[in-house]
Image (cartoon, rainbow, N blue to C red):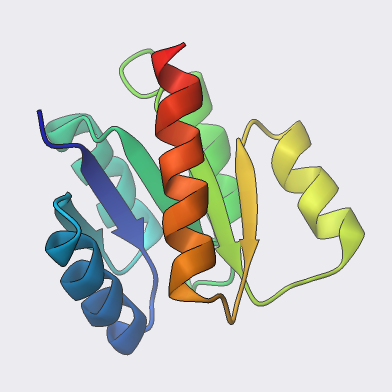
Length: 125
């Protein structure tokens, strides 16, 4: 069964790039360009993973993560933060808030695919 990934980022070029490469790797990709859209799509689509940008207008990734965690329908969906913020405290906050990984931008495609693979392998255990 194909895994579904929800990619959330306010930068269209990142959304388009990830939609293309993850699709080529056999994933079903759903995109959202903002926090409210991400919450709606997470409820409707029930993705196997959310790749979530932190710095977005209106509602940042931290707020989205908190709301995903308190909703029974989305609480169990693994979330990996995607961010240009590379400080240790940001990574620690992400993990404390319930993210399962923290991927720093710019990331290599190989690194991203490796992390996604590891997340799905751990989830299968």
